[in-house]
Picture 1 (cartoon, rainbow, N blue to C red):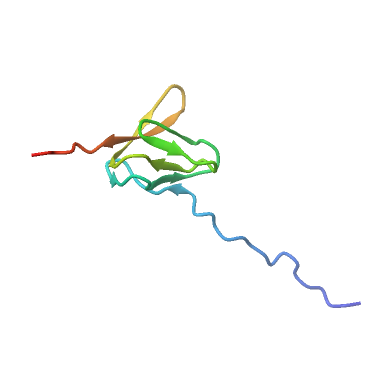
Picture 2 (cartoon, rainbow, N blue to C red):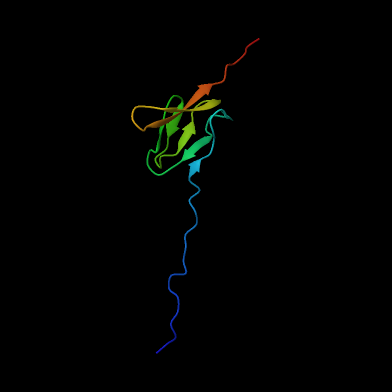
Length: 85
């Protein structure tokens, strides 16, 4: 008989999920706002949703998180006012 050994010595890397840009921050188009599993936070105005539910900015502007009906949370981008003077 061989000596006993530990068989559970494996662990996976963290998935780096969570909010990447916070309320009031300025973002550029394409910036990732939230990485998540499922729609914990829903895309709002000027926000796209990737196939892995990653939310990203479609336009440059400021991040704004809001509450919707029930427990739904939304993230929106308020476009930056372009000053053509």
